[in-house]
Amino acid sequence: MTTLLTRFLCASTFFCLVSGAAEISHGPLLGGVTDHSAGIWFRTDESATVTVALESPAGQKSTAVTTDPKSDFMGTARFDVLAPDTTYKYRVTVEDAPSYEASFKTSGPKLAQAPLTVVFGSCYKPQFEITGGPTTFQRMAERKAGVALFIGDFPYTVRGELADIRAGHRAIRAIPGFRDLTSGTPTYAIWDDHEF
Image (cartoon, one colour):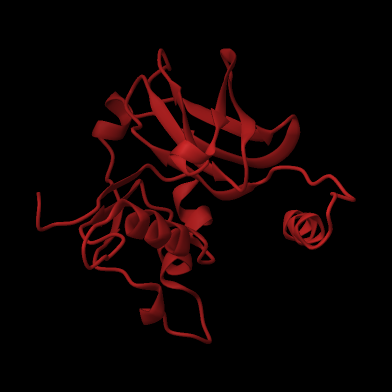
């Protein structure tokens, strides 16, 4: 809200009266989790330096990514040389201001021998949400799954233009429950099942 107010004040006057701080607008989203690596995706509402720090019993690792308009303010912090079967807590900061915390577990022999709960969906359009109760993503998050799969037309677009895909992702990722589901659950998706 502060950023929107700042932009309004800056746009409606010939000079900017207040200084807003960049924020995470979408994400974080956890993906690419293996026994030794993980990626954490995010989007900011303006250009910013985003730092993601992982903490585990073995110590801390961190990486910084700068977002900009060319990437639609998106970035991914990638981590390699992680330990298998290990729980990592992570903290996202934007321009040194704490923004979000979550955790995940890398795969490994223990995970391979355990049952795996999967939540999945496809062909999602925000206008299909049933109002007056939990969202689809809140229901999925309640299941505490080991993986989330979105298996086509996610987001659904008519022509598959980059601007339409980005707008569709922004709309989906702003729905309550999406962040709760995807910040700590390894998430994988294909954008359109017709091509795959």
